[in-house]
Image (tube, rainbow, N blue to C red; front, side, top):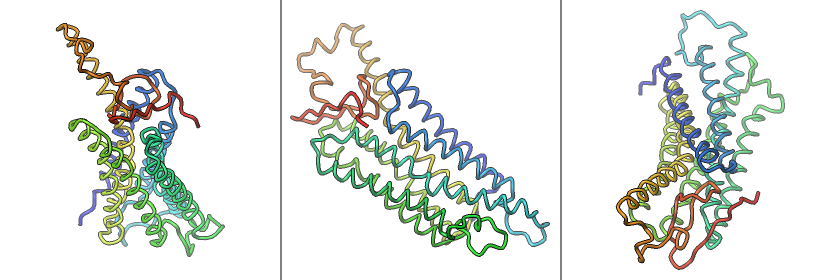
Length: 324
């Protein structure tokens, strides 16, 4: 399988990073400007995710400039010792920004789930606590594994004649990937019992399912990256797939809040239209209010209409303030 041209790697990553940046800024603007609310735990993890993506983009750009994406050419002049050491340091740092940094979007999504899953679903809440603890432990394990795989002397990773390198270790790669995949699958599966267990309009349920199902993109990128390293050996693809996975995860976390913005704008437009025609909601005795039968689902703490789920005979009002 042909790899992405090395000259295209940085531009592709720049586009992916730009898209994720726009969505994060839109979500933060929604929270702080439109809703006049302080940032939530999920928002802060999302900011950390974006900073991590920026660092990954920086290390990949540096690797390209240092010749780290060049095909092996025995006739090419040898790189200077200084450039080789710098490239190994950049590669070692890049391990953190992908292997460990990929967990920041997961934590942002889990923080959002704590707002979405009501106390009236204790079994699902317990599962959420378990997945959160497991994801956190995987993140720490990955960080320590990448740091100390070659022993306590970390500098051996950028020694020219060093016998060990975390970046080149297939064992480290496989362990990291298994933990990443397991956590991805658990985080991906968490919201679906909630969505299918509640009474929703078919159109609205389809929208929410589409948002959370977009997590399949991150799973696909992760599996594709693993296959590339293990069998395909198109190394430039690895760089692109790494950024794709993190950018897609950031998009998945950002979408629920942005859907609430569009939903709110739609409601406002609908109200304006019904007011102009003299047929406001209060003139229909059979219409229920959002606050009487719906549970707000959002990563925010505002009082605007966001993602509302009908919960039938039980109403679960989320607290106005997060207790952290």
